Image (cartoon, rainbow, N blue to C red):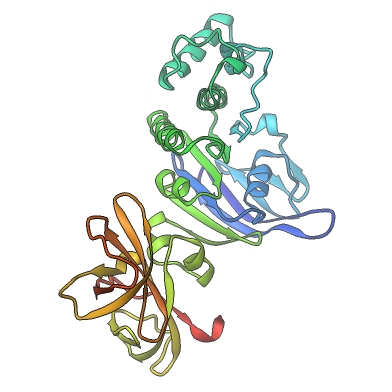
Length: 351
């Protein structure tokens, strides 16, 4: 069976000749939930618009269920691609009630069938009984649920969502994100979500594509993107951490000022190579009886934990995530030990 969606080497340029997307390639399987993640202006929304049919391709092609829907010569118009779309702004029709908004794309069905579909979607999304309300009578979260119901009502092969949670407050964002994920899994729909928010990507996506300057620099699981970033940019952009200078001593050892770190080392590195080692805050564990100490320079209270910024004797700073009942003051020495599951190295020469 072919992939549901295949994006093959697509590029899109603006009239100024600046490329918004450069050679992007990835695949989505049937029922897969995926995210494009990156900073503003990296090209992720342009990729979404190209898939939807709103942006012409300068190179490459896009396939849906094995059918070529777009290439450099053009492609199927948006309405014939069988896709659903949810936008950040909801884009509801203000003069239509909730039921009519949801059924706007179902004119081929009878009125009774349209009504049944709308009420089924509303029940699934916790909006039962609201079919006669108008958009201005709904909260932001309710409007987003209606927009989602409208996109899913025609049972599209693929749902595209562009920053759908960004206008919501933290608690509602987290709740709706999980509800949408559960609903899509329940009905077996595939989805591609565009976001700049790492929590959106990590909690929603089974695959995450990190974008930079129009290119997809890593397409992987959220776990591997966090723990095994493919590039220095991904390491810096995803999560928190520091890059500590070191020298490769052997095929399984890197010497740093903190300690000699052991683990499997990529064969591209040879003994004597100057490298930088990625250390995440959860690699540095608080231990009063630990073998080494570092001075607390800053601390950030996060409820269940503190993020401590620690200074090594050289002045180089590292980060440590510590349960919040270990409450230490700035200026104290904090006992630490290393719990590094694997080594992630980058060449010092490539900074």
